[in-house]
Length: 101
Image (cartoon, rainbow, N blue to C red; front, side, top):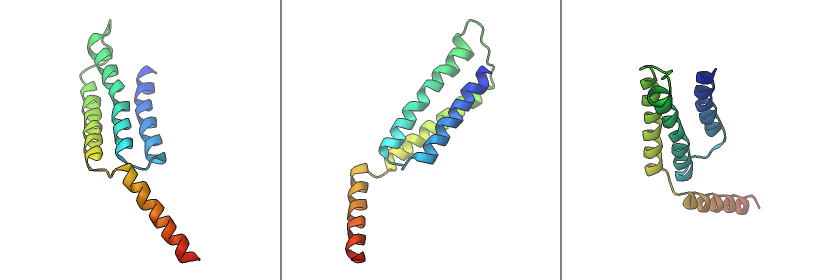
């Protein structure tokens, strides 16, 4: 149950993010920060725990988390600034209102 809960929490985190977010630098930064506790989980239950309950297959989860973290870094570096996006949206909205009248 513990394993299913932890892996399920990653899926829920990613699903909520994909469903609700407009991807900007802030989105990638906070998602990358949200991934970091999963490294602690992997390390504790694979190495430190009183009885390590996870085996070498946890390396796959580590690789997956690292891939997501790398993609967050890449997205953060290449995403547009949020302020510029809002200015463009405001300009476009204002332009559409003027055209409609």
